[in-house]
Length: 148
Image (cartoon, rainbow, N blue to C red; front, side, top):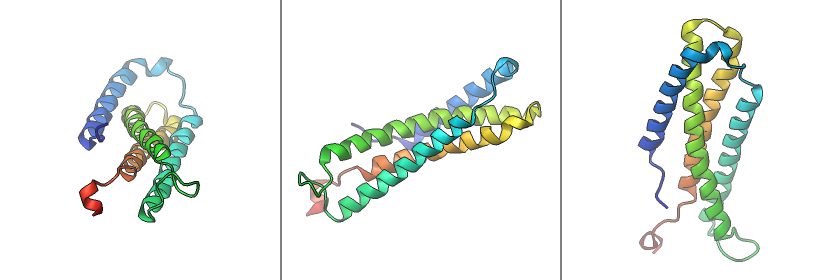
């Protein structure tokens, strides 16, 4: 599995922001308001990714990766890596989408009551993407030559 590219994440983020802005310009009048649950879920996943990254980094630092019950199983670390990768991409998509919506709401002054939740959702998406990327990096095993 290849490492996630920051430029790839940034490209997806910008594409989703632009696409969202264009779609919202046309369909804002028929869209429902953004539920608070979106921001809560995005921030919750960001916190989860940070907690998992801290746990994995501590275990790697203490050389506690292995098959013993007191150690972190390598398969579990690989599953955390997949969670981090998925969170990074999902955060880029949702963060970009809500940034596009936020730009429209800011520039049009149509519905100021949506602005706080849209900003919280956009920041939650960015935080989720950054935390997922950090979790993925934390689960990466150093090359064998670096260990010796």
